Amino acid sequence: MSSILIKNIKQLVGIATESELKQAFYGARISKVECIENAYLWMENGKIISFGEMKDSIEASLGIKDTTLILDATGRVVLPGYVDSHTHLVFAATREKEFCDRIHGLSYEEIAARGGGILNSAKKMANATEEELIESAWIRLQTVIKQGTTAIEIKSGYGLDVENELKMLRVIRRLKEISPITIKSTLLAGHAYPLAFRDNHEGFLRLIEEELLPKVAAEGLAEYIDVFCEKGFFSVEETARIMDAGAKYGLKSKIHANQLYHSGGVEIGVQKGAISVDHCECVGDNEIAALTGSSTLPTLLPGAAFFLGISYQPGRKMIDAGLPIVLASDYNPGSCPSGNMNFVMSLACTQMKLTPAEALNGATINGAHALELGHKMGVICEGYSANVLITEPMEDYNVISYSFGTNRIEKVIVNGKLL
Ligand code: NIG
Ligand code: FE
Image 1 (cartoon, rainbow, N blue to C red):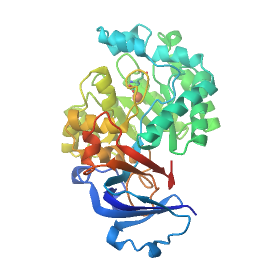
Image 2: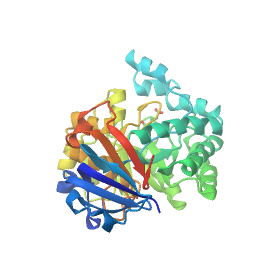
Image 3: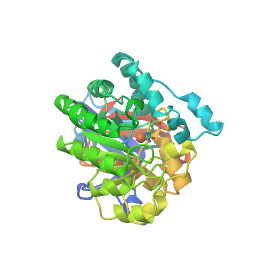
Image 4: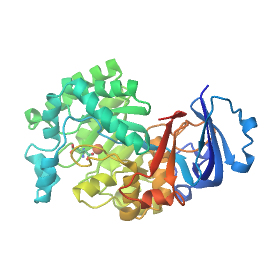
């Protein structure tokens, strides 16, 4: 029976009651962060048991034992851990040469068309062993946990053939076994057409349907399926076909949509009941209309827009239109070599004009919903997973998004254990 009591919390942030957690926050709720000043938080056996004002923390009634770890959070903020619902954390090599090529004027698409980009990562993936991939991904995972990520999604997608996709997914499975934080795995079946199938899309789609998916399903390696729906990558029809193929094996979809163009990705995602449509740089009135009233969550990845120097997602407009937005990192070697959710929130505030409250809800409870975890993590609520962050001394939680490029997270507690 492990237990932690955090006392003297300057501001306990992100409180919610169970009845408001059936769906992602939107409308007035996404703009609001419930807080208690001068608070305590009591966690036992991995769960949040109770919290409230310090004056009501009668330690005996909480069941404090000799073994209880008591943390003093004087001057500090305590908040729910981030849920990063979109990453490509497993990769074999960085791509700084392409970074320099883009500085000299080449675009992301031009680099991809010349066989760089995803194809470049696939070449490196083919030569990497499972052990090497686990080792490098493990280091990245430790880094993002220190920055406050307490649950994460990881995609395959740099395999581009059956053997290497399975290798990537087995690496993710191993990470799940050794990781202190929850990991969800996604088969990114349609990321790019490999050179051998550039003029034979039908052949590649059949490889996914007839070989890759049955093997992934037989080993239970993935929870979701993903496709990069974009001009020059997978068309709307091809995307729909891969989503349908995944659905036959019980895989719900989370797709890459509308990063570079108004590609129809958002609309097909909604039509097929995707859990989320991710990227959304190119979202206007038509896409907003399609998302309105649907259960599909738009996930905004401002780190990718920042790194590629393209226009940001219209997050302000989407929230004002009543949509529940999610924020995620997109950590990957090509378009966002960082998984720092603090910076993602800063970008959402400075570039999309979200308030720090909206950014925090996007990065916590709405991220949890994008991974079907909203019933157990993402807020401070009795019975929820004890995934909480303790900051450096600060005035209030706004300082986290304000402090761009700085990690203000001092302590990370995952499932009731101080890491
Ligand atoms: O989400 N856009 C597609 N996939 C990734 C980037 C892949 C890469 O360049 O390695 C993304 O941005
Ligand atoms: Fe991505």
